[in-house]
Image (cartoon, rainbow, N blue to C red; front, side):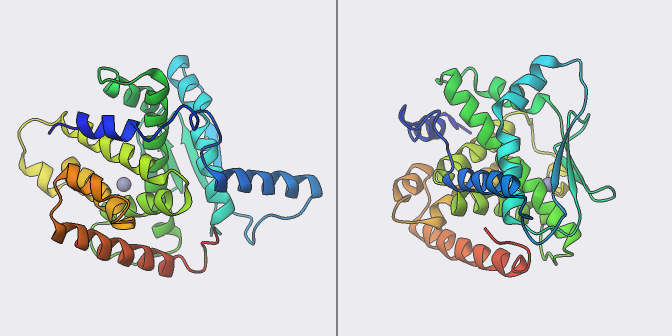
Length: 274
Ligand SMILES: [Zn+2]
């Protein structure tokens, strides 16, 4: 597939005026609330359980510094801790050997340090500058964090899942970006773009690709774009045209997105308070 045209389009969302400014009013507000609550010694939230970030020591200092300095995981975790009431702590282990993954046996999300620079490497040969590459990597990282959060919520809240869990948590990640971030569509578009780039790693399709728990990267790419289009079909009609979605598909995206938001908000009714 040829994702470059979408990448160029998605880069256009980032004006110099916006770049470098606080990217998310909600997270900013949450951080301010947390700071105020800390100063006043007010308990935050109804639950003591929270997401905790844990950094492992590593020899890959450059990889670790790039990811840590981006601050993207801290921002994402601040959003989660401000918006969700958890049953038990979730540890995010940064610098794990494997991942990104969620391990239900120990309630841990594992992310390796190389993830961030690996994403930057993937788009390094495309027409983008380092600032755009860092935004791209941060957006992909955040989508991934919320994908793993989805697995953790399904586990600890014992949420019933009918269908592919991997698709369900992809949808949650997109929904959180689209509904609660000012520039969530741009962020989800970058996450989609990463799926397109990852699809280029694969050679001929084999049986294992079809029985894998994840949908094909191409399907994850189009599903994420479908979520964006479905979140506001008027606003993203041009995107739908770029992708080549038929009008029937646009209508399907709208209906399925509305249904997905309703389903997730219903399932998370007692634990989600954005
Ligand atoms: Zn997953």
